[in-house]
Length: 115
Image (cartoon, rainbow, N blue to C red):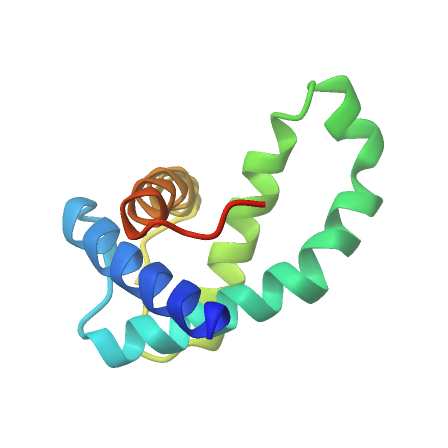
């Protein structure tokens, strides 16, 4: 049940973020749900591999390169999800940052489980 709530909150956060940023186009909530599912799968499978491959650069930049990895994940999701468009790398980077902030706020409001 927790996974479904997380996907719904992420989809809602993606809709809000796309509404705020003019370079990101997300037409409806169904597409946002598909995007949330694709992002969850990419973050589970692809992101750890990218982090491992770029570990030296990540260490040298004190972790800031993780923002670039997040932007790459967003661009990859834009290629996989129909009707979700990102106008470029800068918008993907901004989308990932704003999505993380809004997602954290929404999970705080929703009263997610305390670990």
